[in-house]
Amino acid sequence: MRPHRKPGAAKAVAALAAGVLALSLTACGGDGDGGDSGDTGGDTSKATVQLPKLDGQKLEVAAVWTGPEQENFTKVLDEFEKRTGATVSFVPTGNNTSTFLGTKIEGGQPPDVAFLPQVGVLHQFAEKGWIKPLGSAAEEQLKKNFSKGWVDLGAYKGKQYGVYVKAANKSLVWYNTQAFEAAGITDPPGTWDEFVQTAQTLSDAGSPAVSIGGADGWTLTDWFENVYLSQAGPEKYDQLAKHEIKWTDPSVKEALTTLADLWGKDELIAGGRKGALGTEFPKSVVQTFSGDTPAAMVFEGDFVTANINADTKAKVGTDAKMFPFPAVGSDSPVVSAGDAAVALKDSKGAQALLTFLASTDAAEIWTAQGGVITPNNKMDMKSYKDGVTREIAKALLAAGDDFRFDMSDQAPAAFGGTQGIGEWKGLQDFLRDPKNVAGVQRKLEADAAKAYGNG
Image 1: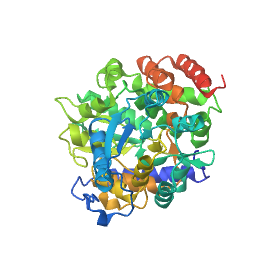
Image 2: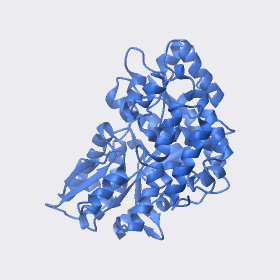
Image 3: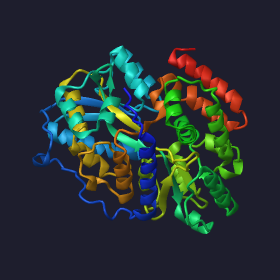
Image 4: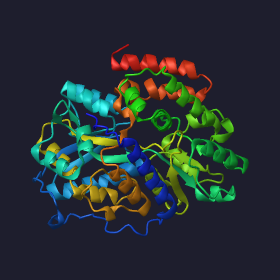
């Protein structure tokens, strides 16, 4: 279930955005202040959580991550293997996580543990009985190390199913400092109008202004959600997330029209709209920080640093800095997201892994790799690989339970979480033709009504 939204949420969002802006200007110290990595290296004397012996047992874990993100998570699994004697294999799900897992479950071969990137999918799986409630040890670690808002996101109808061990601040714009310097830009934009003007200045100076990973529809939903939250406000955001208002609502028209300020100017997009639609998320990051004519800016969450670190020579905090998503309304938006670990098998091994993932031990190993933040609020913050990521994490935790979760991730998978259909496809169509606001609204509403079951 979603966390309770208090009246002070808008102020918390503004404060969080201000904190992120401050760190982008003053705390970009690179990787030199990483502190203790937190990696116990198999020395169980440092363990804060006790795990059972699982010698000879084989576990399978499924998640969407590939490349650097998968490699970083593998370090956590390595430690679990050392402590328990189990053997754990990782299986990438592809972007259609719910379809991949549904096929495995119906075929009688589910993985032991899976990471669900959508709250809506967690609810659907719990309703079907596809996921198992947390055991007492896992739930103890969860409630000890996470705030109520993050605990509640992994619950459904009074039972605890998921552990949101990986979070994201999806309201950041990363920029190539050399491109900004070459164009004579000294201050990052704070408003949407300033952002579009900055993009024009960069383009005029010879840099592809904005890199967009439009081949992955989820990146486009993040663009929309940030504009919508800032412009329409938290109350409307919550209503649209629940489909209590329609996608034909004037507030959606206003947000799409605002997006068209950027998406409708082909010269401001790296490769133009056609190029963006053929660019996957990892490439959108790489082409911002490498190549002969890199793009100047790329929008996405804190996890961008994993691709910067692994796939480019750019140094976070020096060559690559960031600023909060620009304010369209009175405040910059802050959209959070996360991945919930759930058990698909009722086994000792699956519960042991969930217990470990909910612990500070696992959190400190994972965050030491870079490119990830966690809502675990009891871990040692010095574990973060670089100061920029650490400050992003601190700002996210400072918001407490006053945050807005990714809208598309709250929707049924058929609308908000499946490649080639629903919101992902609708916004790809809009990027292809930003003038067709009304047509895209009608299609989005028809797809949403069908997926939510009220059409």
